[in-house]
Image (cartoon, rainbow, N blue to C red):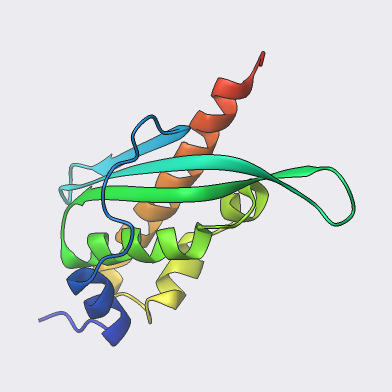
Length: 135
């Protein structure tokens, strides 16, 4: 039997930011048919003024829908907590290792779940940016 950390069990039993954003600014869909995990990440982007002047885009809201195992749900939930409120640049830097470490390390055979959740946010940001071209 796999041993999950307290953090994994907490994020599985009480996932944060579950759901869908109506009219999202960006959507990331990732899946792995081998393990059966599919994740949908929805982001709402806003701008804020920087102290040094200029504007910075940031993740104002984020939601996810994950069809998968406990580790997949926990990874999605933790990823949303790590990126919510961050600038797009900082959110894009959140890695599978950041998610895995924040969860207290997933069992080796479940590490791919942290990879999927990192890919999900990266794809949602890329989707948002692709929609900004020409605006």
